[in-house]
Amino acid sequence: MKRGDPVPYESKLKDPFADAFFQAVLQLKNLEECYRFFEDVCTIKEVQSISQRLAVASMLKEGKTYTEIEKITGASTATISRVNKCLQYGADGYQLILKRMAEKDESSM
Image 1 (cartoon, rainbow, N blue to C red):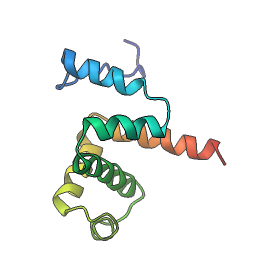
Image 2: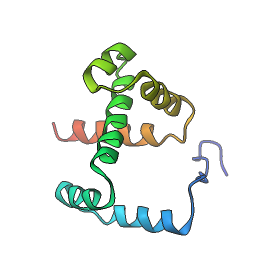
Image 3: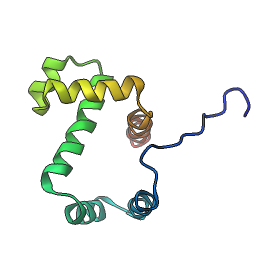
């Protein structure tokens, strides 16, 4: 590995079932397909919780306070803290997707 190359990532979740699930997610082509798939795979509460955590991550990156985030999203301070910990010390999944979403927003302007 050369200096500056991305560090290989080995997930703690990796197994054949997770691989198949993530390969299925990668087959989704648009928002409607995502809604259809996730409404079948997850409970409404699970989708709402995942969505809320992404919103919290975005707001933390914007520099919003826990109080502001709690008021806007309804997330508990424990959830906000957990998301913040992932942003700081996690697998960089939030960082990756937030960067890509920002790049997409910039390119659509």
